[in-house]
Every structure is written in C-alpha cells, then in structure tokens.
Length: 389
Image (cartoon, rainbow, N blue to C red; front, side, top):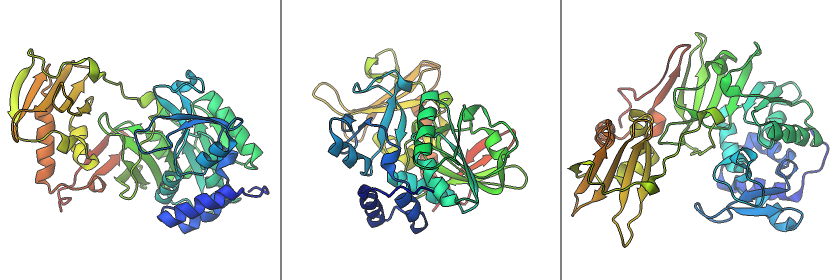
C-alpha cells in the first residue's frame, strides 16, 4: 500500500510478537508494511511498568528515544482522556482513545480472519493503525471503512492514513452505536470499543453478509470482556462464542458507558444493613473472569469492588446497584466465616452467591462455553446444557 521504507523499530516489534506466538504468520507482512509510528501522535500517555503502574506522559519533541521505545513496545498508548477534556501532560480519569496493544490487535485480527478481497468495517478508528493493517490484509481488491465518533480523532486518523499512503481507506465520522445507515454489506465487522451485553446494534448484523464475521468486546456492568466472535446466518441471526486465547479490556462505546460507583464513600459495617453469614470467600467469585461472568449475567446494573485488608479494617468485597440504592458488603468474621451486610430492595450478595453456586454445579465451564445469540428482536447469552466439563 505504501512506498515508504519501514522503520527499524517495526522489525523489532514483529520479532517480539513472533517470539511470543501472538502474531499469525499471515499477518506478518501487514505489520511490517504499516509502521505503528506513522499513526501515533507526538504526545501520549502509557504505563511503562506492570499493570497498575501510573500513566506517564511522553513527548516526542523532548524525549524522542522514550517515545520511539514506547511506540514499539507491546503496550497500549492512551491518546485521549475524558473525551479530550484533559490536556497533556495531565492524567485524566477515563481513557477515551488509544493505540491498542499490538498483541491485542493481532489477536483480534486472528479472531476476525480477514481475507484478501474482503469488505471490512471497523468501528472505532482511533489512530488509524488498525485500519491500515486491515487495508494491507484485504489488498487492492478489498475495501476498508472505519467509523469514529470523535470528530478530532477521526480527522487526525484520516490525516494519518493519507500521509502513510492509505487513501483508499474510507474514514467516516459518526456513531456506529446508533446504527449503520445504507445498504452496503461487509464480509467482516470489527469493533474496538466495548459493547454492552444485549445492546449490539442489529444493523451490524444486517450489514454483514451471510457467513460473515463480527468481532466485538462484549461487556457487562461487572465485567469488561470477553471478546466474542459472531457468525451471521442466512436467516439474519448471529451466534457467537468468546475467544479463548485473548483477554481484552477495551474502553466502552460512548453510549454504552457504565456508571461508576464511589465505594470509598460507603461504610462496609453500616448497622442499618441486614446481616447474614456465608462460608464463601467473596474474592473467589469476584476476582477471576470466568468466575465473575455468571454473576455479571445474573446481576445487571451491579458494580463490584474488592478492598485489601489494612490496619483499620479487614478485606471487604462490595456489590452495588446505583439505580436502586442497593449494596452489599462481605468481610471475614472468623475462620471460614464471612459476615454479609445487605441494604436496599435487591439482595445483591444472595443473588451473586446463587449464580456462582449454579455455575459451580455446571462444572465451572469457561467463558468460551457461553453462547451469544442476536436476532432482530432479542439478544441473549446462555450456558448450553452440555457445557459442563
């Protein structure tokens, strides 16, 4: 697609992904051809250390070596906080645009399986790098359309794609969560932002050719994943399963954002709550993705948090439903015994424990065992009867 020579850093990144086994061989030429640095802005934030490290602001003009090292690391680069309200170098509250981790990009492409000649729609343009990779893969006989809701992000991505030689990529400013206009059919649709459970726009299914594939991170109020691969049927339905090999945590589509709960303002030992006891350690069902998913499905609208033990309090697990004002706290009280406090019309811990015990009784099937179904008038996620181990 482009006649510009690939920078040396590209080969190092590709070698790293190859060594880790995260880059399918058929996508290697695309990663070599579409250099990540052509699409990353001169200023961004990233976490140079392990998960949980603080974000660091990087400026290419003042620290070009660090900038280039970050670009060709297998790390996500935040390019916007708080829909653009936070200006560099201040660190905002909510990342709202980024250049995704290269290994995650490769994993999503593996799930999508784009082919030469395909028509592909990307939802969430970001920097434009993924659209360039798709353009390399589908080739001159294919076509890539990418949709971005943020006008500034869309404009910069369009400029990046043109400067890198990808003028054929069609960049559209719009909200794909509100539906897709027109009657163009696509062989593949990929979303790079989280779609809330039960809210995948049916127009995405309508615009996918029978036998085509939709890949989207499907989230619930209590879970940020998983990545689900849907296949569209002749009858206009789509069915899918979670991708086993890739754990993703994408920022949400703007209209699908989950309201946050400030657990720090709540009293875990509030005497006004009803008290009961359980022998289930709450961190067991809440801190593992597979374990938490049945609870997330059973408790729509619920949030969770887990506090570590300090000198002033024990470890505490929280559940909260902001819409009803219901909450539950669970904390140790003796060996193998936990005190449960519940307040409000929803008995959140009772429902969470029941969902977890039900999942255990099914043999603790993994996320990939769940089945998603989308029809014109209904969306569901179910655990088939034969899904137990």
